[in-house]
Image (cartoon, rainbow, N blue to C red; front, side, top):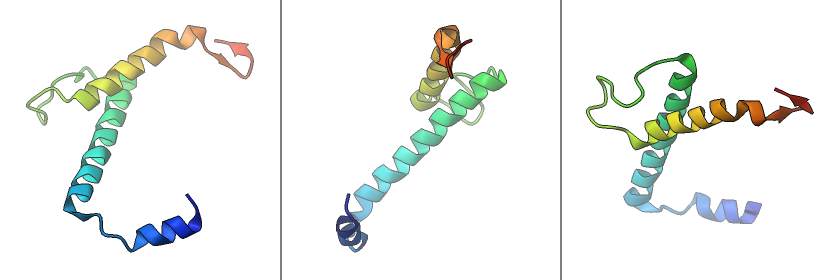
Length: 83
């Protein structure tokens, strides 16, 4: 996006619906990150917690992603060195 495009969109009000979507996306990102963090910390609150009365699909997605990373770490190469 060019600087001219950014300047144009600065003054445009996309409305409450856009703001709501942006807020939901940010909450999903935070939930996903928390799932990854909890997995590597060994927190067993993977699906349910006192704060969450239902399964949070974004949190669970973070847990699944962390599990995938953990399970494939032996296949990863960092700076040409096998792990």
